[in-house]
Amino acid sequence: MTQIIIVMGVSGSGKTTVGSMLAHELGCEFYDADDFHSPANREKMSQGLPLTDEDRADWLNSLQNLIQEKLEKNSPCVLACSALKQVYREQLSIDESIRFVYLHGTYDQIETRMKRRQSHYMPVELLKSQFETLEEPTDALYVDISKTPEEIVQIIRKGITP
Image (tube, rainbow, N blue to C red; front, side, top):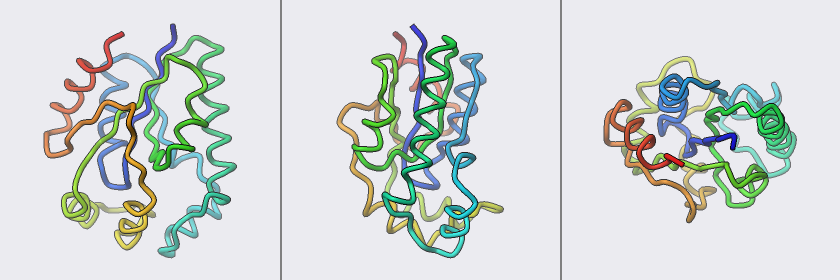
């Protein structure tokens, strides 16, 4: 069975850092859902405007296609993706082997992280809208982001072992 792990959470929660480290440890490919956004979506976010469900539709379709391709090729991967709403997660859950890992943190924790970040198009001003949009998952492995990325990766590895 091909395992697809989706590391989810609001912007600034550490999805890319943890996801890439996890993929390296598991010896599989890593994808960042941010790379699948259209130029128009990136521009909108860089202006401090939150994306709508309509804005996210093509993006989610692209991610679903990626997951389908990985499943067809029996190629495990880790995908860093906000997946803020349950309906988004349902769209990406096209196979029983897909596992969600939720990087959970407080608004203050993540705001501090985002203020330290450089060269990312997502401004800290959009964090509030991310938390407002977030529907916390009921079927994911919850991991507290106060731990180091290395500790988080080990927690995930223990929690997702098939």
